[in-house]
Each structure stands twice: as structure tokens, then as C-alpha cells.
Image (cartoon, rainbow, N blue to C red):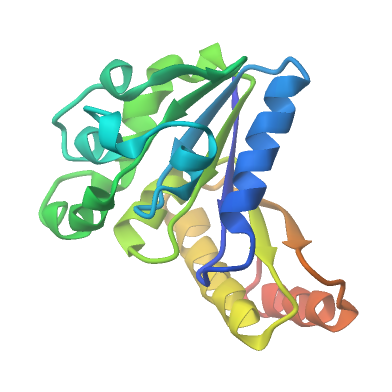
Length: 204
């Protein structure tokens, strides 16, 4: 069964999408069967894996609002061993459209579960905004990779995720774990210490 890894931070510009793209591509190059799911409305993961967003008829937005099944949104072999579920800017609207929908926290889990065993890894590029979308990701995810730079604003983004993590783990997904904190661009011991303290305070 595929291991589901979400790459996340509340702040943009920290290398989150670049990490998700490269992790997906490198695993595929090693012969692992990978599914990349782009949950960021900006669609940089979709483009970065060679898919033209404007040419895609159905994407993750259609899946989330119940207008398409997973087979309809799946882009096969974007590169060898790597399939993609693309996104579009329309995904931003899903946050409002899901208000009042029953079991909205489980949409992605229920939709993707039938094909989970087809993959060794499922890599998700999470959005920086939109609680419902991120909630769907964390409910479905086995592990989080938290990407940051040695910057106060980026650290605050991680602290926001830490709070969401506690809520999701307690109420929806008790097996959710933080795989690690990936510091990009520059090494900075202080941010490691600060984040470790934050996790401890949140009882993660």
C-alpha cells in the first residue's frame, strides 16, 4: 500500500513545491511507482511535472466537488513511473463550495483510496491557504514533511501547521506523523531548536 507524504508550509516561497516535485521525480527515477497530487491552486507542481494546466479537462477541483472520479483526473505517466492529479486556480473556490457538504474532510481519502495500492508513494503538494483543502490532505496523509527557510515568517507558518496537526491527529487521523522538518536555502540551528520547542508545547 502506498505511503502518503504531504509537503507543507503555511508560507509560500520556502521551496515547498520544489521539494514535492523533486521528491516525486527522484522516487520515480529510482523505479518506485509514484502518484503526485497537486493541491495548490497555483499549479506549480502540475506545470513543473510537464503538464499544461490549460489542456487538462478535469482536475483535483472537479474531484473535490464531485464532478469527476479519480480515473477521470489522473494523468498517466507524466514521466516514467509518475502519474499526476493536476490542479487549477478553480480549486480556490472549493473552500466555499464545500460548506455544508457532509464528510467533506474525507473527500480526497475516499476518492483516492481505490488506487492507493497501485503506488509505492503518493506525494501531495499542499496549499498555503484554504483550511478545508489542507484538512483533506492531513486526514489522508501518513506523513508530513514541513518545509521552511530560516526566517521568522516561515517559522510562524510551521507553528500554524503544528496547531492544525494536533487537531487532525486527535479528531480524524491518529496515525498522522511528522516525518521531518526540511530547512531549505540555508542551515540555521536556531530554527530547529525553536520548532522543536513549538512541537513540544503543542504536545505533538
